[in-house]
Image (spheres, rainbow, N blue to C red):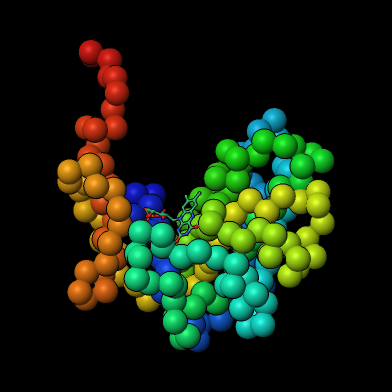
Length: 192
Ligand SMILES: Cc1cc2nc3c(=O)[nH]c(=O)nc-3n(C[C@H](O)[C@H](O)[C@H](O)COP(=O)(O)O)c2cc1C
């Protein structure tokens, strides 16, 4: 069921590093993005597929992990992602691709979860450094990075209390994600 996939599709930040993800698998995920809706069918997104240890380290060095977990700087050796997808936007085709980026990333991540993988989107990216490390041409805007791997992390969804939306980690390293209640999201409903 779609709900089960969405429930499983958490932001995972610790992985079984020894699980490789091959380029074929990454291409299958990009194919899901290819088939996803885009504004005016412009299809301005391009993707970089990264899965070897040397290049993985380069991408890793450009990411900011879990801003709310102040005493955690990201996964240790052995728990790092196995692969990355860097989502680019060709500004010569379309300048304002934010919705398209979000939709593509969600398709990719749902596809990853279906394959027993998982990941995390990164908006906090040192884009200048990443551009330089991979010689990304100026016409490609670096929009988001998706880290992928076989999740090692247990994640629980809680209700938001006291309006506190910050995720946190308990003493057993279980990651907790507060979500607002359904009734708190509905601004209006028809009286029928
Ligand atoms: C557009 C976007 C950018 C994000 N950027 C980061 C990021 O830079 N670093 C990070 O650790 N998590 C990042 N996240 C993950 C969010 O923190 C995460 O989605 C949120 O805590 C809710 O958890 P959930 O995805 O399990 O529902 C990002 C998520 C989205 C949608």
